[in-house]
Length: 323
Image 1 (cartoon, rainbow, N blue to C red):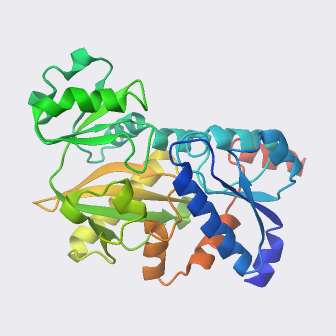
Image 2: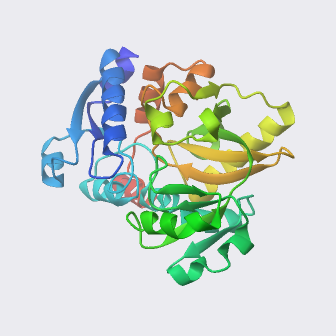
């Protein structure tokens, strides 16, 4: 591990940022930085919410670990900036990160790829609320499509709740996603690697109090149960993991990500979304799945960091380097 650490050079852990998920990112970044330094990596925290790109360039990092969540960190913007700066970074490239962040575009990609995902409608105005319940049924989900950590997400059980939830979601996004609610078990699968080395980690089942896996239950409460490996039949588990890898590849993800599912009463899995920059906190699911696979947190962080690279035009750049 130490020899690997020395080859990684000076490492920046990008955290904090300016999104609504700043609090979670601060925890993720701190955890990643501590894990890296514990095995000899020359890692340094860099808060992109307080310091600009000019300061980032001045740090002369050999590579960076993106522990940012939400806008301006997980949505392709930071990835694009790092490409221009020529700094290798962890995770997906600008396009894949942007697609994964936008849940409406994710839905379209999943459908084009023939992957099972719940029915949905895009809401552009209050007029689009008419007939929505007839189309999607109750309960249904209202989502701000460019947020994560369940921010801007509302479960609708009665028609009277719809207009209020839509108004609240507008605080996050101009265009809103309405999605059929699949009653069943909540599952998640972490995926690591790129190309032929992509693999799924053990499936996790999330059992939250009252089925309410909200921001509090995700990051701060000890009431949520995590069953890892999830108690599934081998055939269902294989299907869920296969879909996770297919979803990851359909968006062009790299490095690591997490696919979220609902498993209905007939044990049919339905893809909800891909998180291209998953949480790395004490309550986070990717480290939990890695641990079940025999990978400790520090080893996980080093493995992800080792694959850091610039993605845009890398084949063309490699050819130029040869010349």
